[in-house]
Image 1: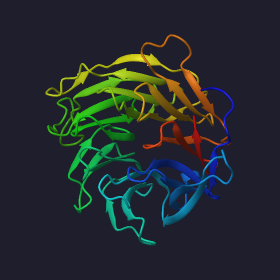
Image 2: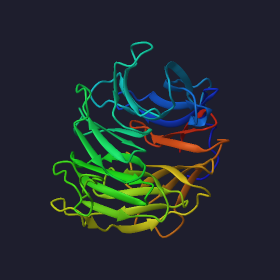
Image 3: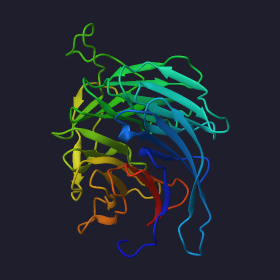
Image 4: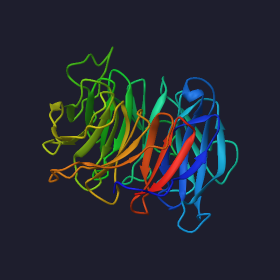
Amino acid sequence: MIGLKPPPALLQTPGFAHYSLAWSPFHNARIALASSANFGLVGNGRLHIVSLGPPQAPGGPPTLNCDKYFETQDGLYDVAWSEVHENQVVSASGDGSIRLWDITLNNFAICAWQEHTREVFSVDWSNIKKDTFASSSWDGAVKIWMPDRPRSILTLQAHHSCTYQALFSPHQPDVVATCSTDGTVKIFDLRAPSYAPTTNAFTNPMSAAALTVPASGSEILTIDWNKYRPFTLATGSVDKSIKVWDCRMIKMSEVNQVGGVCEMQLPGHEYAVRKVQWSPHHADVLASASYDMTCRVWNASPTVTGPRLMYIHDPHTEFVVGCGWSLYEEGVLASCAWDSRLNVFHL
């Protein structure tokens, strides 16, 4: 895949640094983009709704159009499309709020929740239990929500420190994985929430994980479940490493297990790895985004013996913090960065 490629499709949103993107599960040419003014340090946010149009020239990249945007009082850090309603999207905000938007309406969210006590850093909609989504926060908590409920339906005290991401398993509806400042990945069974026996449930309660993976000596910023291999996850961390974990030894009927086998490491990034995402079309293809201003694509097949790096995308001029595969078009990848640019390119 390494070689000359046509230039990527480009959309620029001046004044707003991007934090996350999500392809619509209903429309093959629609992307939601979460952005923040002043790099998310202070100021307001925007949720952009972007569409891909036909190329301006034969063989050229598609055109990217910002169809609509919604203003928020604080920066937005993540976004996820509803798996039930094609026009609804949920956003995670720096003020601790979660908002549900209908992109056919103007100006205001149709629903808002305020339970987290710190910045909400991730949201993820279950693609099995399609009426349910999860959020994670710098307060260490993971909350499970249903859009028609006024309050969360479950809270996990997942980590003592910032929980950067919480993701539903694409294989089992009641399994959630988390990653944290503390260098661990945890897998929780939502059917059997309980407190860890080693903590004081009154002053400092911690939810009991089915499995804890001591994955890094540094902060783990991102995780993703493999779409084809159950209990295989990828992690990206501050120490510049990407690791692939085999957690099949987990017994979901038990809690407080410690384990996980590191299948491989993928060295190459020069700074912290901010996002990893497995391909929805190939079991062994993984994309990553990094503070080294690149988005990279890897061959993570256990049987490959040669170079694993397949492609480097490097037109960005600031931290690349988000990447995502098109769910419909094989080999189409989007990246977003603090340079206010969204790129869409074909491998």
